[in-house]
Image (cartoon, rainbow, N blue to C red; front, side, top):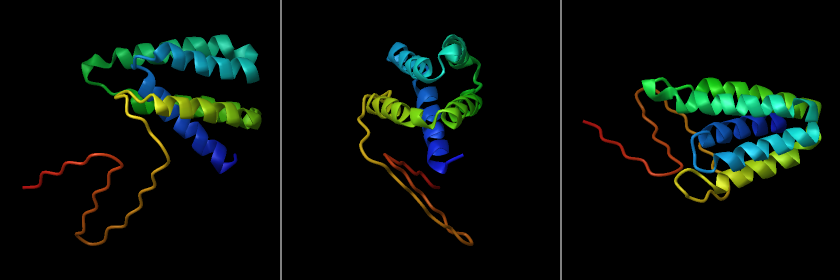
Length: 138
């Protein structure tokens, strides 16, 4: 699979899982279903059920468990399968992700990209953050 499409699937998955418990859930859900209806209409109802199940899983995680990683993996698979079958869906999915990123849970707008890279050797430490970072060493 094209690395760009795989990266897009990962970004879409991470963004979706972040928004599962957010206020704009209905718009998020509708956006995903719209993409599926356009490119895989036969699977749109199934995706609606899977989205609702993912949200229920995320909301039900009050017992201290963190299902985000598992949910992200599931949605990466779904988005990657869609893009493998319909690479032309990348534009629609990218537009959807950009919309989601403008509506982050804390209301902060995200513009541009961030790339962090570091290498530590021996006893060196590396601290990186794309936002605020607080380090309390003792």
